[in-house]
Image 1 (cartoon, rainbow, N blue to C red):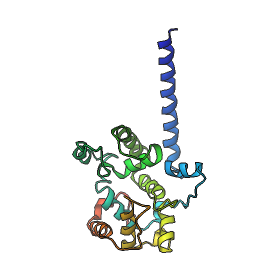
Image 2: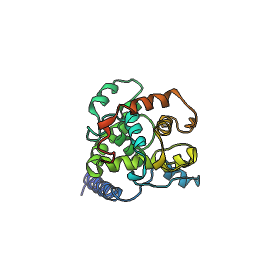
Image 3: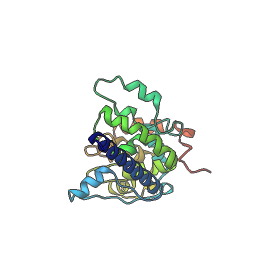
Image 4: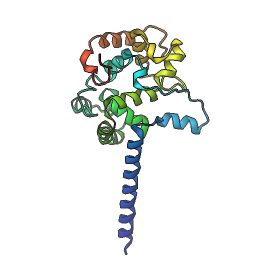
Length: 221
């Protein structure tokens, strides 16, 4: 067997192994709490991580409306990737922006990939987001997002954030508090949701117009 043939066989085995690991991760991720790469990095560095996983029905609907209003207004309509929005930003000379990322793509980045802006990472995000949307569904994607998002130094997930900043559970968040938490997301280690901000007011205003656009994750009735 030639060296090239051996390398090809090793490469095929590696790809099969990675595919099997991804399939297992997607299957387990439908039911089990999952960490983000940022959380794993903090654990490895022996830094504190504060998170209490909560199911989607233990989060105030106002929080989900605020996330969709700010991060991904077509969340219930696309299959994990908003190709229309993505096409609008791919010509950015500085690389794909936050505006191109759906909630599903942000989940993929936080669970499977690394922070930063690059075409390589975006190229990996797209197929992974399509797989995650298919395997998990909208409600699970939103549940994972709300439980792994960073809301301050060592603070992960909406339950930990709600208790840290407002002294209440995520189920009791009001529209203003939800908007202020979501307004933190672009810079969670510098922004304080206890203070009013123009960003929070914009999120709050958009949330009022969401309505049926959030129907895939909001409780019925």
